[in-house]
Image (tube, rainbow, N blue to C red; front, side, top):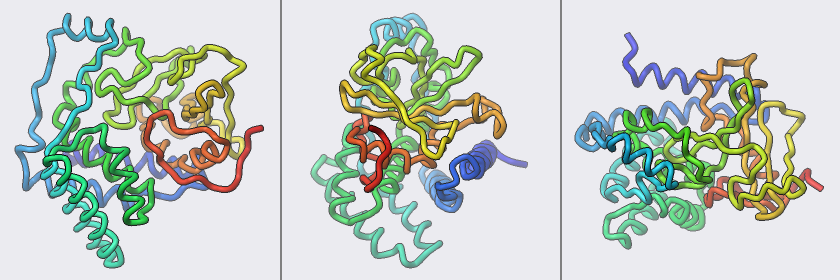
Length: 307
């Protein structure tokens, strides 16, 4: 019988396979996802207290008041650096088991993280994720998308994993902010859903989603339609790269109506679609737009589309 972990793991793998159909230029991520998941389960078994569910429920009226005032619930959360290093080591061990060629590069990566955390008094705040990504990429020449995914997986597992029950109950219907109501991060992608094709932005770190006006930039908040546009890649109907010429930022939107032939809306994992459309990000960078999330996901390539 499947446990909860196995059910979720299979859901992720199913979505990974569907994304390979929707975005032919993307690569299958099942091997990497399985390694990450297995490393997490192994580390979790050895460190049960770290992943213990946390009862962090706020009184309903207090939570509603925060939503009305656009106050973030957990601003700039942090985890112990020691936990980050040990969790990273578990993932690296699992990666090396699958491919010995990873051993030296991953040793350099772990050394870079260790040096960074030593300067932070063994405290790792979520606001430091983009900073650490840049440091690792520069010092080790590791792939940027892999480093970003690795650090997000670790931080989300350590900080937001234990708060998962609470996060699932957060009602964001009255939230009007342009950033995540739970952790305060600026979004990088979102989706259209429902009969009215309402736009929802989704947090790349904790997974919280909230409704946001379709005709408004999620970064500078301009509603000047002459300043905004979009492009697609190979006439793909599921993913659009939207951009704002006012602030020079871009974001990705996944149309769940166009995705219906592959899966029902409730089964869609926007984060998986994001990982499979990083070549869309490369084109957005080439066109002179930058990531509004503050995290640079990919390196710039040499071809572009937008005039």
